[in-house]
Amino acid sequence: HWPRLALLTAKRHSDSAFKEDQLMTQAGMSDSVKAQRARIIQWMRVLLEPGQLVEVRGLQPVRSRIFAMFSGAEFESLADYCLRITNDCKGVYFTPNPLSTTRCRGSQNTALDQDVEKRNWLLIDVDPKRPDHMNATTTEREASESVARSIYETLLARGFQGVVLGCSGNGHHVMVPINLPNNEESRGWHKRFLQTLGERFNTPQATVDEKT
Image (tube, rainbow, N blue to C red):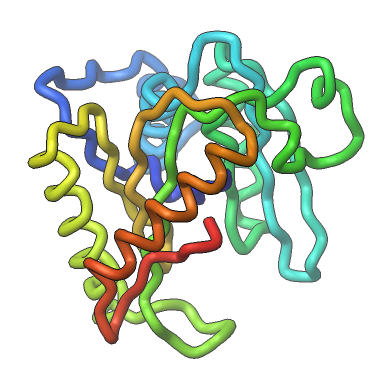
């Protein structure tokens, strides 16, 4: 349920081009920060339903975490929060699948798997093989991209629509639009799908994470 925010540099299989966000002209930001902010807003509009509840979570070096909840319409506030916490965190993540508003809005706790209302996205996480607690090298990231791109292109060739390919920082994600309940049957189907992809596409250098 937790793609890293680096996914927002992703590529979407679509014929329509994104329009330049007006927030790029906001005063007080460097050009690179403006571009990053606009890209976050851009991709949140693609990945989130209007009004859905989303959690943004930052993992800090001392094993603590910070988080905030936003509605699917609060794109600007969400982007500002991400940019504000990113330098203090090892990673910033978000929930692409909608959270229960009755269970999570106003909660002092981070969301759990059972707080997800339904599955709008199936996440395929491809990680390079590397030493624990080490950032991936360029070669290792390229290995994960090769596997992820093979999966992405195969899904498109099989007729899947709206598939997203993106970098997760150390590896790569493929996100597939779905419409399934968040229940044991869906979780079992997701697990079997990941296992099948792993059997077909895993390499000695990069593998599909079957625990996603």
